[in-house]
Image (cartoon, rainbow, N blue to C red; front, side, top):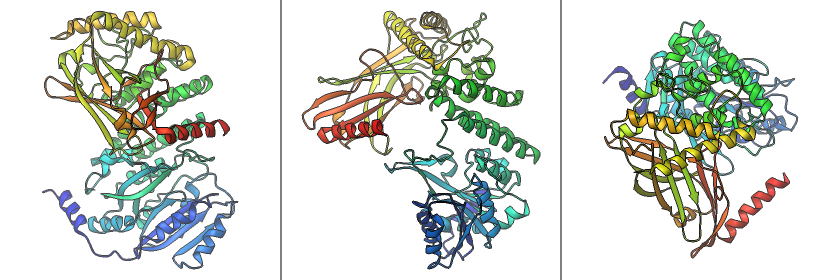
Length: 604
C-alpha cells in the first residue's frame, strides 16, 4: 500500500469531533428568497463552524434586514453590507475572506446549501491528511424537479490525497470554489484572491491560482455542496445565462487567464491540461447550443473561438488528436465562417457521434469533409472501438397497435465492420431519476440491404441539408443532400474495402424493437432518454446515444390508447445535442398537466 492510500485510509477512519475551526463565507445579492436558507445550512453544520460571514453586495430587496434579524439570535453570524454593488462574485468573496478569523474557510452562494455533515467531512480530511485544500462531491439539484446530478463524480469516487496537483491533472475539471475547504493561512501566504469587480467565471481563475501554489489536496467522496439550478428564474445565474455572446467572451477570457497563471507558476502540465479541459468541456458545451442562437451570435461566437484557439500550439493539438473537442476546434480554425453546425453538434454530444458523410482525401486518408480536407480523421483508425464516435440513427413511431423503435448503426471508415457489431441493448433512463431504468431486449444487429443503406445515406444527408437550410450552418463544410449522399456512398465503398468482413457493401446495420409504453408510463409524467450499448464480436462494447431522425410523421405528439391509463400522450423529441428523447404523460391528469405547462409557457 502506498503512502497516498495509507493517508486516505487514516482520513476515512478519523471519527473524532472536529474543533470549531471553520469559517463559511456566504455571498448574496438581491436574494432574500434564499439567503437565510443558505446561512442556516452553514450554521447547522454544528460546532466545527466557528463563524459564518454573510456578505451582502448592496442588495435592494431587504436581504440585509433578514440577515441582521437572524444574527440577533446567532452569535456566530457576522453580517457585512457592501456600500456599492461590485457586479460580480469575486469582490464580496474577497471581502468575506478578509474578515475571516478561523484556520479554515469555505465559500457558499446565497441560492445554494451545505448538506448535513459537509464541514465535518472536509475538516476531518484536512486534519487527517495535513492538506491545505480539501475537495468533496458537489451535486447539481434541478429545481423544482429535485433531480440531482453529481459534478465530476470520477474525481470523487474514493478518498485520496494528492501531494502535488500535477500528479492528477483531472483536478482542473472541477473549477468550483464552493465544494472545497481551504486553509486560510495558505490562501493568505500565497496572496490567492478572486478577480475583483464584474468578472464572470471568477472561480476558474481562482482555482488556477490555488493549483499554481501546489497545495497538498485531499479528496473525499462525501456530498459537501448542493448547487441549486433554477432555470425558470427571472434572473439566471452566470453559468446558466449563456444566451449572449458576451458570456462566451467572459469564459474564454477566464480560461486564458487560468492558463497564464499556471504557466507562469511553472506548472506546464497543468497549463496543458487546462487547455485540454477547455476543448473537452467548455467548447463542446457551447457547440451543442449553437443551433439555438441566431446568425449574428454564431458569427460572433465563431470569430471569438477562432481567436482563442489560435493561441494553442502544436503540442496542444497533438495530444489525443482524435478527441471530439480537438476535432471540433480544428474544424473551427479551418473555416473562416461558421460551417457544419449540425454535424459539429453531434460530435459535441456525450457520447460523441460523428455523422456522415465520411469523406476521404485523394490518397484515401479520412478527412472531415470535401470542403475541409485539411482536418484529418486518420487518428480515428487507431482509436479503440469502445471510444469511437459511432453514429446511430433512431426513428420512433408511436401507434395504437404498438410503438416501434428503429435503429441504424453507421460504418466509420471500416472500423465498425472490422469490430463486428453483433447486438444492441436498449435502455430508457428517466430524466429526473437516473436510477429508474426501463431495459429492453438485446437485439441482433443485421447488415442492411443495399437499397436500405442508400436510403439511410440519403435520409442522413437530408437531415443535415435541412438543418443547413434552416440557418444552422454556413459555407465551406458538408455538402448538401445530393453531394452528401454521394460522399457517404463513396465512403461506404472504401470502408468495405478496408474491412476484413463487410456488410454486403452497405456500411450500415439495423435493429427494430417494440417500446414498452406501459413501463414508461408507470412513474407518471416524465421524460426518458434513450441509451444504447453496442456489443462487438471480440466482447468489447460502446455506450452511445442515438440521433433523432426527423421527417414526415416523426417527432410528433400522439395520444396512444391504453387499457390501464385510458390514454398515454407520447412526444418523441430531439435534445440540444440531437439525441432522441421521449416525453410520456399517462391518463387524463397527465394530459392536462402537459396542456397547463404549454399554456403557462405561452402566457409567459
